[in-house]
Length: 283
Image 1 (cartoon, helix red, strand yellow):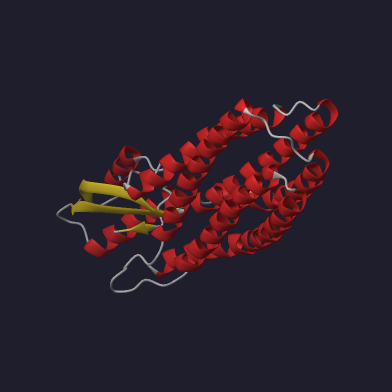
Image 2 (cartoon, rainbow, N blue to C red):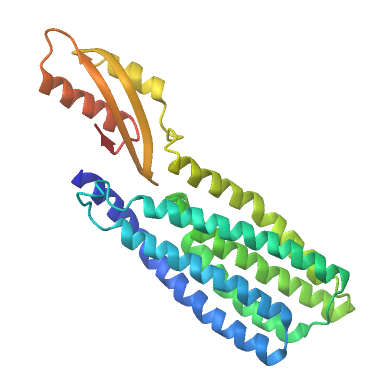
């Protein structure tokens, strides 16, 4: 079990530094956006600041999940706090879906009655936000494939980067044509872009919580391979599940042949399971 904890801890260590940088960059830009929105009276900037607030909360939650995931197991939590990461990813997905729905609703209201926007200042502030979010996406893109927690944080930053692009494009259109319908139309497009990707994240998190078989584990192939291990007569009660991203667990019952030695078969079976399959903890 100690080997499993080291695997999880090293993955967390790889992700903690870029996530911390993104957290403080996003928090700094959030303050700048609130001040800019208040100074110019721009509703668009203040609305985007609300979106940025959820980003700060989402990335902060991901950091908290990593910290909890590093805590050792206890007699009451024998697997430690692995699942906290999945809960963080689930929370991020739900929040992003609600944000997307709100963006679509707000876009509908603005389409009915588009307000006049301070386009020039809005573009400057959105440009600063774009630079911050581009750097955040660069830092988190690679690690987003390593865990659902990092994927949730990555989607948070990516969605805000797209919002910044949309605000800048809308600003250019409104500045040059005075066509204020650009703001709600682009906002609706951003909301529709975010929804399907967030839905995938939500389904993956729910599958982990339902203890579904890991998508990279083929139970039948594993069972047939075990039957080829010397000393194995039969294999029963095979269960595989995900503890957290990158840590798959397996439990099963092996029936030995009459002439088999228990310890020898146990060693060979364990070597086959962890060596030939993406299983980090086998019982």
